Image (cartoon, rainbow, N blue to C red; front, side, top):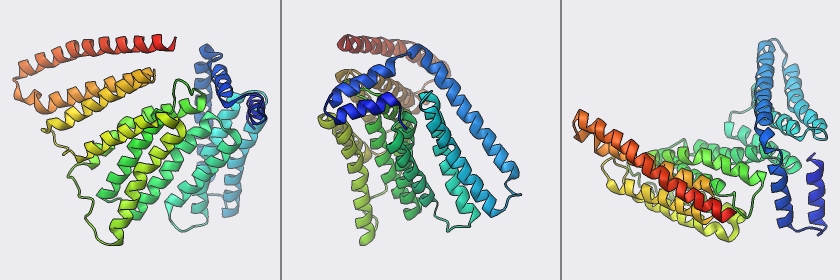
Length: 373
């Protein structure tokens, strides 16, 4: 069960006593309380979940071979249920502990699904196991609506779709390219879900996931562009199928952005247009247009952060810009200079460029703080 105050707050919203905006501000206020003590508690709970899960895994694995199939299945059911039951009892007394226990229950659900397939020698289609795990996470989210279950839903749902896509296409080069496009847009949607006028722990969870995944997915996208595989390389139904899936890979994240950001989703549409143009460029180390276009995207992300008063986007934009400059230097300048000249110029680039970027970043962050106050 959710925390008691959260349950009552939702009842007040449903009864029309308060509006959704007021409820969201109350949640944001509660989320800010006890900020000084929050990170040690979260650290202790996270370590506790990891150690408890690892200990249970070692205990089960040490005795797994000696158990009959019936006892194995009973043990799997026990592991899946015991943590959720313990979390339900803890919810009335310590909500953070309840979140940790329910998260451990969802993790053991995934392990239980694949162990059950091993016990009964079920037909091998591993994306089906990911689908069942995602369904379990969705059910837990409907009941709990906490940050841990939000993270599981946000990760497992695209993981299931991606695994089904890769299994159906046998991980072809074109399939990886389509997948990379969708993942970049989805990461960007997650990253921009936390808005100044729409705060809250759930949106913050999505923003953290997006911040972690956006750079790896962008690198994955760049890697899949190598060689410029032409999209219409097949004929008949295969081409139509690939085209439909590629459209869905672009449209689905944008529809999610509209649902989360409403009218502000037009910025996500601009980012999708930037990605589409980026996909038309040849990914070669000597192609200056690639570096200029990435630098332009970093500038757009910085402007996005200033417009919506989010320093995280400003920081990420400056990081992308700095990495782009370094990659360009090592790919196109470093080997054309002498050893001493290359080291001197690299040192000047780090000192002068780092100082200039940090000065500009601090100025923009200060502007965002003044706008928030």
